[in-house]
Length: 407
Image 1 (cartoon, one colour):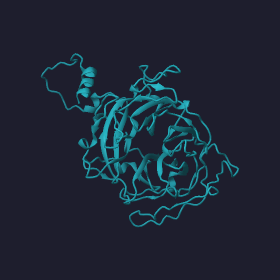
Image 2: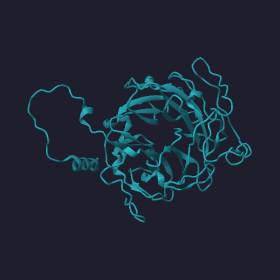
Image 3: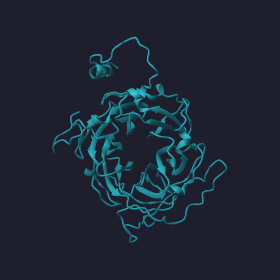
Image 4: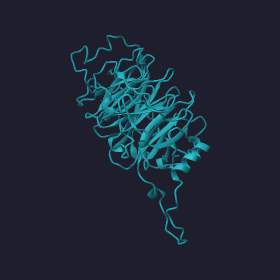
């Protein structure tokens, strides 16, 4: 606490710039007094949250060890890291299927190495509730926009964004989850867009959002991907034909692969038997032989440089090889060449690199090292930093080759 107070004093301890006149003024919206800027928001496993200016993390060369981003214990690793505007709403989706709201500028702004504040002191969580995912939203009333949710067991659900635009302090139900399932990812989609689901074993499936019909908040969803034995979903992104999919593995390896143009879906949509409340049949998890994994790209005569559009509910195609060197997939993001990427390890080290520094290669490959890790440390998450969020004060400049980041 003392260190946090010292940081606040050093940052804001200047001379008074206003005059106390004693005159009455009209009602003031606190948001009008706060500058809009890009913020990096981090949440630890035990629920400590903070925001830090994105410009704090200067860009580095690919493969470096990164800056110390947060003082974390091994038993309390960073689980969520993303970039948002200070004026965005944050939607906190919990493991119990509820969603809560908070303005980004209402979060504690602390230094890069600070642990943060307990989220339970900001939101009215119920007993046993933990943050499963977060999403930054500016306009809930934008027409034709939906929230697409994906669960660990491969289910997806689409609900109009407007259904989540009425904040309640006690939260509302976002998705109906089965006892052995949990929420993994949430994205905003529009009519005609496509999404891609990625699994820990390195498989991926791309399908049109129209394959999942709109459903109410208190529903479970439909099958998005058919999982193999012992596999689970790790992420979902909107498939932008002009972008690349950056896949990151646990041991610090990854790659970028172009999404490629969408197309006519292959195969038939699965016959999900939906009940009156939107329940579906249990998604199947089964062993998949190497022959069954033969893909259009490598063994069936097609292109291994893109992710073809399929019907939801299939097994997908091979995205990356999850070899012993790579480890399982931990995170996926959609990036363009002009973007940057923040990578954070389980022990709190953060590295910021240009997306263009990560090699663009085809599917079913092992990738390259994207972050050097200390012994016993692992890659926990990656996040896209949009080009327009780049710092203007020089802190985003790349260091000279061979320069090591100071901790």
